[in-house]
Length: 248
Ligand SMILES: Nc1nc2c(c(=O)[nH]1)N[C@H]1C(S)=C(S)[C@@H](COP(=O)(O)O)O[C@H]1N2
Ligand SMILES: [Mo]
Image 1 (spheres, rainbow, N blue to C red):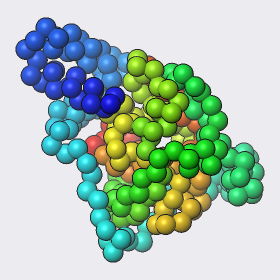
Image 2 (image 1 turned 30 degrees about the vertical axis):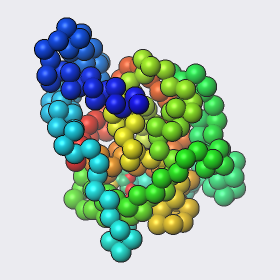
Image 3 (image 1 turned 135 degrees about the vertical axis):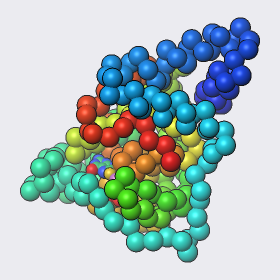
Image 4 (image 1 turned 180 degrees about the vertical axis):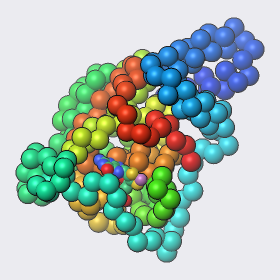
């Protein structure tokens, strides 16, 4: 429902003839893109973001494949934050992994009516979706895998997201931090995935829970999730050297 509202807002911007359109234009220009970035280096992002969002209706869903299309899948970036030799070693992660993630919880915070700690059982009680999609890494490789998890929209609705919220920020055990806007957050293929190729998500692919953002490049699909924080404003994740918005 939220997604529909946002698309309507965007559509009104493009057509932009009514008084309502002007109001929405004000709202849109003020929101997700420009002023809150605070950096001239983000100007390119803003352009990509605006251009891709204008095309959104033509490419609503990422292509889904069948089981026979599943390929081998390299593990990239952090492959185990519980490894003591890793520069991003996390004692908390090592401990929960040692307990087979039985004590792991996802913290849901920020602009929601019911913040809380979700265990894996809590997440698995929410509606489930399975999809076979292609992951495209900015480094040039791609791979096809099957993902099972709870649509992020379901979790946000369960937590009671406030109507002013515009960003969902993610924090991982390896220190990785990133965010997406509400269009991607409420996209039907945006999942919090706990399963891969019919099995629990393996450690090297982000156990016990990772994000799948099928509308963007691979690095947005954050592994080893620890916290989800909903905000009204853009929170700068610091300079990863990567653009914030990279639609595919
Ligand atoms: N927490 C975390 N998430 C991450 C990364 C990472 O290093 N740490 N790497 C990203 C990149 S660049 C890619 S391509 C994918 C790789 O996922 P995979 O290891 O399952 O192939 O995870 C993304 N999510
Ligand atoms: Mo990547």
